[in-house]
Image (cartoon, rainbow, N blue to C red; front, top):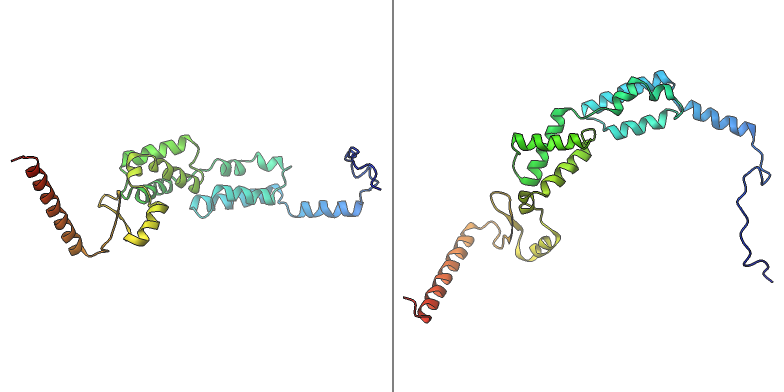
Length: 220
């Protein structure tokens, strides 16, 4: 028989309540390894200064640098976490020249043109006010989102999945000289003569239909 099938579960009990005892040797081993893997304050500050140099040079982002510090510095080291070295890294921002370069790349990638100086300055100010000048990836994503929401960005939108699927039958999607997504396809590839012939034939057909309709309606 099955007894107590629907009885209420027992409350959770601590290791001590279950009869387990702490092994001093194991505890000492764990504490020693935790301490051995952590920098003291001086080494932590030197390590942080090196990381800050890499961040300023553009070889490392701030988030990765902070993760590296958290993996090597004990959370209880209040002396280090209140130091100028840690504060400098925590408050570091991208070099203005690099930030402007990222914003310029966003214009080129999304709008197929370099932004004007006033446009780049405006986007830079928005990113600064939002606290996005300390991470290149966040700045890049922000700039792309902002530009994509503008009327020009919507007109120059990326080719969507439907366009790419149709392109398998009708040729590659087409942008005009300004980079606008025309919604048309390069049916004849790069053969300009065929496009000219098609446009000429289309114009002749339109002219014929216009004349026919005018005559049928008695328009001189």
